[in-house]
Image 1 (cartoon, rainbow, N blue to C red):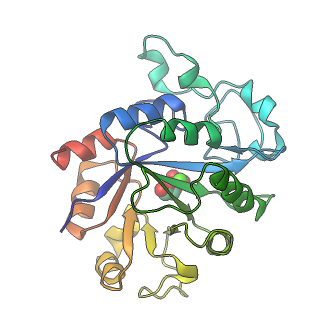
Image 2 (cartoon, rainbow, N blue to C red):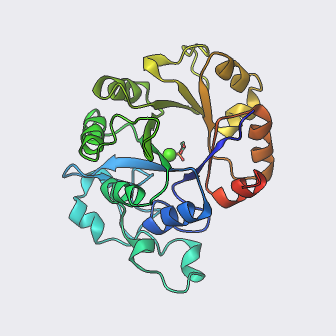
Length: 260
Ligand code: G3P
Ligand code: CA
């Protein structure tokens, strides 16, 4: 059994504010194989790395991300809410500034080493398929829409929405996709994931509740990336299950457990 890939969920987001450049650079320093991010569209059509529909939890702004322009979001502070603000000596722009997907792509391409990037499109969105259309266009501009095995930066697109996964398949058939699963939908056939997806992304609670899930998915030729694996007992569970990817807020812990 090969060791799983370790992906930093929203960056090293246990230690630093999620979805900030500082959290992603920390994850790369720690040796994570890859990074996970969520993307949403602003009112003026920019892809930004923000998890929640609303700004309230992770910034000093209020209301919907999708109702704001990029310039409005750039004026907000996305870092001071985090407990790291009390411990990091100086919070600089890398800890507090909104991260656009474009800036994250630039950082990953400049990393000088192989990096996997898992990009999750968030739905429902008022912009529906425009999210995937803008994403694929941006990836094409960066030469990332047709990843080859030797490319240092390899993007995979994820979503809980099967429709979104289908759109990515239609727009960029070469891009690998992950179908994320919080529960097991009754229509899902474990042998064959829909819309050409070859990677399943169950939550760790689902893996715990369904011990046969990972072996069944893998026996059918799929890979399995599990989120969000933060606790030691969760890590032991998914390692014993033989998963292919571990998505965690604490990549350094997972890497240490794997002896890396
Ligand atoms: O990596 C998948 C995981 O991020 C899905 O859940 O809510 O953290 O985006 P969420
Ligand atoms: Ca996510």
